[in-house]
Image (tube, rainbow, N blue to C red; front, top):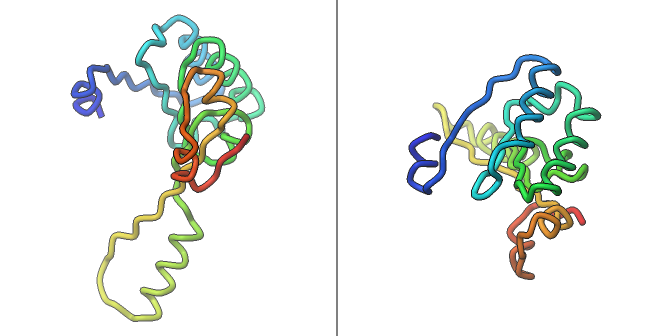
Length: 142
């Protein structure tokens, strides 16, 4: 991830959290980092530590600082997080069932990703969407 960020002229700085307290402290740091060019990505269920506390605070910081926030669960987009990229378990299950029925041996890569977008958050942080941009997402929340 660091190499990819470097190619885009950005820096990648992972922050490990293991508790609600450490997640809240990490979120407080977002109030001070330069937002220009920054994107904050929460993965592996960090927001699941307590979404009722963490997500509203993140959304407020995101809107106030024009800071894009990406999460790993679609339901966080419904709460105001800009973007989510998560496994599409239904698509994965359908594909796995077809492969099982065909009785194909071995391991097979099963791509199944779900993309979600919160349109109001995009507007509030200054991201201009074209009409066809929304069609690229599996879920669009107003």
